[in-house]
Length: 198
Image 1 (cartoon, rainbow, N blue to C red):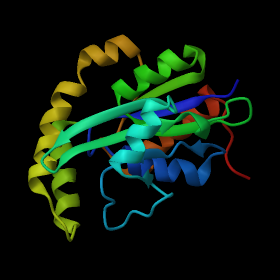
Image 2: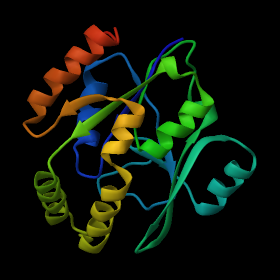
Image 3: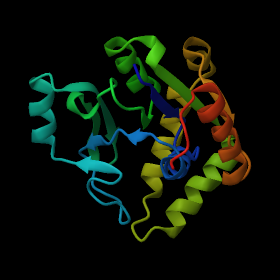
Image 4: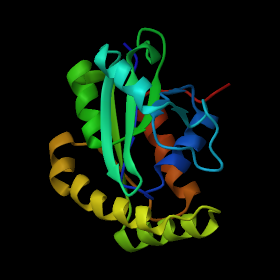
């Protein structure tokens, strides 16, 4: 059986940028989540997420087509994220996803623990908040209220207790992207035996 690598961390911990780099260099397939939230200006349907409406999400959930689903109360209403069961074939491929501890637990209940590899990105709070501000400042549709809500919610969702419970591989992402990718290189090749792309 192949592996599912989980990039886990609070908002603005860098996991999406690291995920994009990982997909460029390693023989691993992204698990694209379904979401009901609207796409950001730079996002394309089928690249970062599959953007669907709430009715479609609820129908799939009702028909037991999802491995996991998470609903977040935002200042814009409820936004849902989910993983479709048919998007994964562990007999053939290694996969990677950016997710949360709640999502990881649902996968944990669905698959054997041996194929799940959680990698947690550790970033000090001040740097994480600055990165969030920098991202909003660059956006044409800045949403500082939602940014603050996510930051505060993550204080409750990403605790030391979670790390103690799930025992992830911890990656320090307080430096440059290049420094972080050196750590990822070591994990992918030496620990997980996931090969670079040819």
